[in-house]
Length: 448
Image (tube, rainbow, N blue to C red; front, side):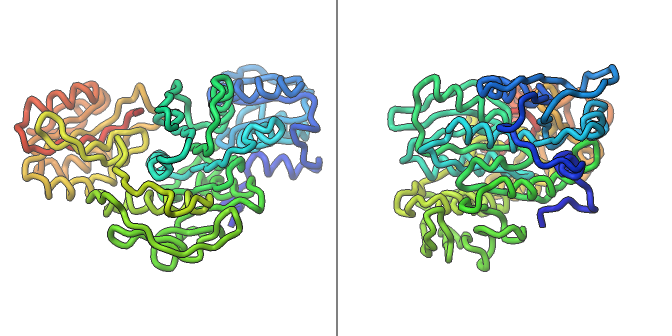
């Protein structure tokens, strides 16, 4: 279950096969941390405070060859390709590897960062941010630190404190907690969105999905296998939450055979285990129920969120069930007399359009569609052939289709298809070209 498909081995697994016993941070004196783009500097700063001799290297810019490396340990992100020269040399020299996820956990434990704080970690292919935001809504009556790819904030009875945005890399956990400590904040619960696998710092670890798998590490790894393998970072007392079709133990959500499932405007749970060692059964009713909660995306996200907070041992009666859809995640809003279905975010997929369009039809017969990508804000773009197919098949349903992104100009056609550079300009055109009562669907890949 935890291994890689096709017999592939991660960098960490390959280093364990070199014959040396597993090295950890505590035992290592000299440590090399790879990939400052994805948090190596943050990890290195923490290691220096622990008295380690640390070097940071950017493997994407290395040009020269390496002599024998004088390090006890290499810390590398799980997505790093084994084809980089520094990786080849470290493996040839039998230097053990651990992942950024493993390093974050060991540092957090060594420094007691999460003493008296319950932690929920969330990873997966899609739905991570939505699940984190829904968890925070359910925990509205608690003091909660929330970190996602969209925002980092501290919620308490005194209001909301917002922090500068951090990425979803594992090292961001350490950066966020340093700022929390500097401001003497004391969260009861911390919720972290983590890319490409869980660190193991959590009392509860959530896998939102493994669908839409893709290759990482220079095409040598399946991302889903890496996320599943990260479950081994957790202690036995922790609880893993995942869809019912993923065979990973712990608590499941999904259909009626799972520990938790949605039935209309109710959430039902059966034999759901908590970190306190209890098994709970029961039912919760939404105080507010948006029609979008009936879509597959929100049913999955709500299932994961409810399952996570109940697994954490929060009593069902203490949850806030007056919840709403998440900004930028199929959220229905009003914009100058028009309906706006906002699904523009860094993780949006063209496959969501069928569900969104069906919801839009129920609101109005007049629709405008905004698609594309603001490439300056995201690493992964939109496949032009997939976008062209969507436009060819769907353009006739809309008054107009507005495509965001210069790279698509001249490659996609249609009498009602228009091109603009950015999402803001596209929204402005949609408003100018519509009347009150129209529906505007915003489904642009961008960082929100």
